[in-house]
Amino acid sequence: MLLPSDHDFTNLVVLHCNTEVMHNGVRETVTQVRSRYWIVRGRQVVKKIIARCLTYKPLEGKSYEVPPAPPLSEYRLDNDVAFSRVGVDYAGPLFVKNIYSKDSKMYKAYIVLYTCASSRAVYLDLAVDATSETFIRSFKRFMSRRGIPATMISDNGKTFK
Image (tube, rainbow, N blue to C red; front, side, top):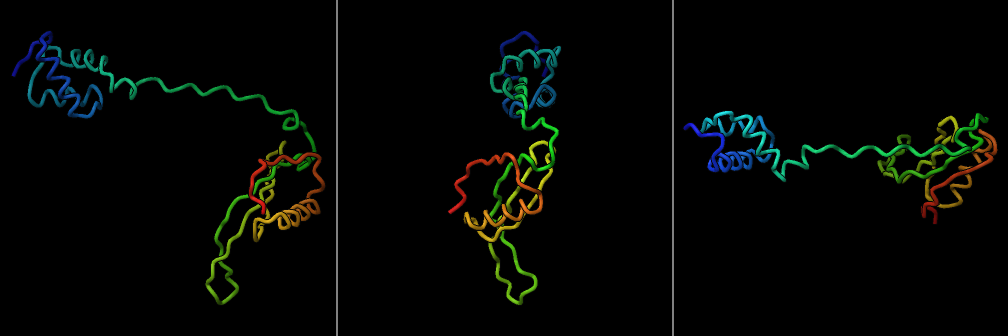
C-alpha cells in the first residue's frame, strides 16, 4: 500500500512500527514499515519521526564526558626509593586448599597488598586470618624485606578484629 509522506496516518504507522522494533533505530523501523507499506520518501519520514521519539533519544544521546583526573599527590611524584611510600589493603577471604595434606578441607586466606606509591610496584603477602596480630606479622615481614616506609596509606577498612 502506498502512503503519502505528509499524512497523519503515515505518522501513526511509523510510530507503531518504531514501537514494534522496540525503538531500535531508523534502519529497523524502515524495514518494519516496508514489510507492509511503501511511504514516499520513507527514510526521511522515519528519521524525522524518530528524532522526536522520547524513548529513542536517551539511547542515542551523547554519553557523559569523563571528568578530568585530579592532580597527583606530591608523594606520588617523588622519585624515591621503592616502597618508601606504601599503600596497604586487605583482599579476601579467598578459599584455599592445602595440596600437601590428605584432607580436602577448604581454608580461608587473605592477601595483604602493599603498593609503592611512586612506582606502583606490588608486594603481596598471604595472611591466614583478618586479625590485627596477623597483619602486624605481615607488616614486619614486609619491613624486613623492603625496609621501613616513610609513609603508609590505608583505606581505614574495618577488616581487623
